[in-house]
Length: 134
Figure 1 (tube, helix red, strand yellow):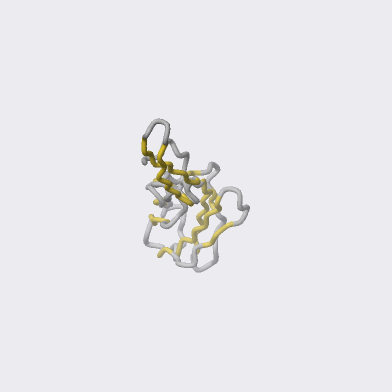
Figure 2: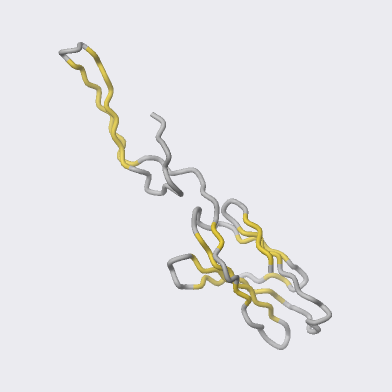
């Protein structure tokens, strides 16, 4: 099968040869494994056998997945075709910085007012933070 990456989704294109696959495909089953989990997530909805593509949505940003696909006909479910390489979703915009604090101060020596801002990194950075805008 072929795989096309979108921001937080993957579009799977399932290609099969009707001359070789003589039994009508009734449904295609799909699974994915998130990197580091060692567990397959099975999608309960089924793709009708007349379809040859499907989009898996609502995946986590900046995360590697391994995908598998199997077909079922009236005889039973075939072997799972698993992609040998991991595919990674794209980054998305970061969550907000945490615990933001703003303190106004006045320096008696220089007679200057200033604002002191502190924060913690975002809980969900979705990639490497390259800079902050204040």
